[in-house]
Image (cartoon, rainbow, N blue to C red; front, side, top):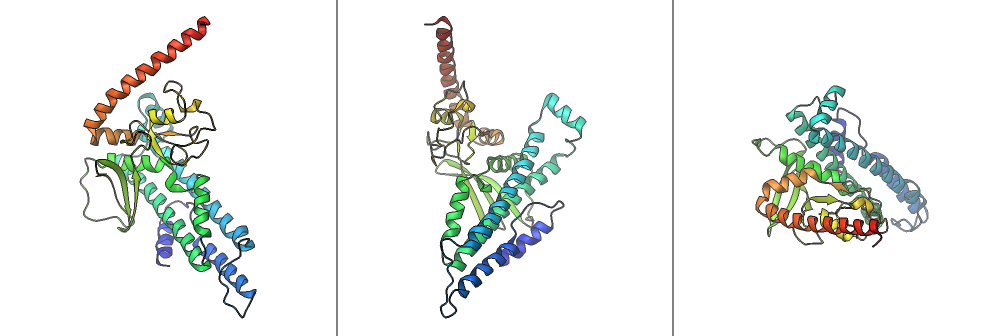
Length: 321
């Protein structure tokens, strides 16, 4: 497996030991499963494991799930710290400087952001490869089924809202920087693309692996404005998300009922941990300025209307009307 070697070289090149996919251990588990299946009947070439396989269900998938959880947790924690340092201003920035957390310069911040995006993409690719290998060996679709189950558990790293923020941050930081002709060893490029006047974030790895993050709100079917990412990974306009959650902009998404579902995947309980995508908001405001100003005026009218209705309702309730 060529990618396996590339992945191991990447993980070994990191200064700090980071959670990753244990290719060697997982491949050993798959081989053991194949041997056990074959030993059931030596005269017949049995390669598919049964639906209730003690090896796969008890070792392979739980091990991979633990690794995916560790990768997701590590990435989210580091990404939040990077964005916190970058977005800090005023007293908070001064406080972080006193604590010694704000030591990196602009170049160091770009590099750390690039490293985190690379870490997310290469691990997402590693997980996809090992599950594809599993299905190939077992002539099954259990790997695809496991991936779908993991997505509903919000353990898929590409679902992380912080990935979208880091990609937007990378583009923002490099807006005035001249691109080098020499491509980095692993990470190639991130950019904002427009297709049929609809924007999306694109990341390329190794020159062949590419992911696209659609920036079209599935509620209003327009480019996301004041974007918010739900815990399921889907991105919406903040006002559209409030509308879908049956709450007002004044109350906010924290007031949403846990039973409310994502408009796209119909997953429940995805509003409480929603993340405001501030870097993406900055990026779209700069690159899509005409649309942004028009949408801003429309949003202001709607928000003033909702605030007026909210306070009128509060006043009537206070007077017992």
